[in-house]
Image (cartoon, rainbow, N blue to C red; front, side):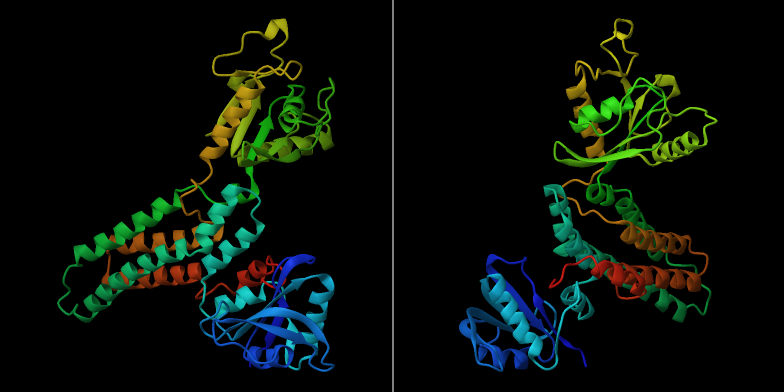
Length: 425
């Protein structure tokens, strides 16, 4: 039998109000010794909360009762909305711990039970985890789109189409006695659904929004990279000297640039070196240049690496011999601040180009991998070599959707996901 769990589900006390939840098959039975009679389902009532053994009054609270499966966890559930003082909360939790058959919930256990009982799917659980961790308004909006079931509803439409295609394929197998040609409508339907999934896969992902857009500052030694990073950060985060090769490893500075989360990264100067330590830094810089969402290059424009979002900077523009920047380069001076505002504006523009729009549903790497598997299977089915192979590819696509929603093959991700939740969520 499933255990009955309890925990504080609101923020840490002290607070005006604290919410304590009990969920599981014995939730109603366990709450009665503390609050007396329970109100009707989905109704609230004021009750005196008492220690079930000593009879000591603990608090006067609002009590709510929910009957499974029509509750947030899909189980019987009781909420105590009490005063949020530490002593009150500790006393109520201590009393619940004395009730036979109850135990303190583990982090994320309430949400995990909601998932296991079919109240939410895996994409909504991932959205809730992101919502809890959201620090910017853009992160909140993106997480809310998942948590409120935006992706789940879209997946349900795809699954409905896919089931229809699978039914056509299975019917064709049953009637394929005369070795008739494959129905072109079936193949076109597979191709159309694969194309729609591919369009979703081309959308900006959620990781840059969650983790910050990786903005890498690169160039040869003594080009002014660290000075630029310090100016954008507004503080001395990187050591600056006139000695080439001062920066031997990368320095990452998390920032918010005009509301956009970025990871501004200073790197070691790119050049050939026989110094073993410096060579390690140069190797790491090269990898970061390849991984950058936005690359800021301080060096000769002709030496800049190829990059989709490249911003070439002409540093030390205050020096007389460097007044004229090369075409396409942005002048900048760490001494006078020349060009800083325009540079920040361009960084903001390029960073926003890799982020999902606020009204779009953004997917993560795991979701994209499942979508990609489904799209590949549908594309293979659309080739139509054999009706049996078509049906098998459609089964593979259905299984990929099941992994996407958490219906199958996701055991390895569940502990990691729900471990991100706080106690009581």
